[in-house]
Image (tube, rainbow, N blue to C red):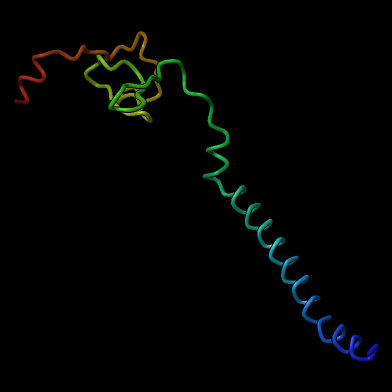
Length: 108
């Protein structure tokens, strides 16, 4: 009876060692992939983003916008203020032109 249990234990031993090695290798590869992803420049750039200034706001049905929406040159985007002054700020911008009804009538 003891010999039978010993044969069974010795039979399972390589499988258990193999599973242990596979698990350890899988965890190590996952850690390396995570480190590689964190070292990728795009990920580093996203982590170093500073909070956008207070001229960012949410408009229902449109989403987040940056800058003065009443300006003719506003990009109406959450990523860029406008084409002439994308870095901002909108306060005191020398390129400011109010968006009027005449602009919308010319397009129609």
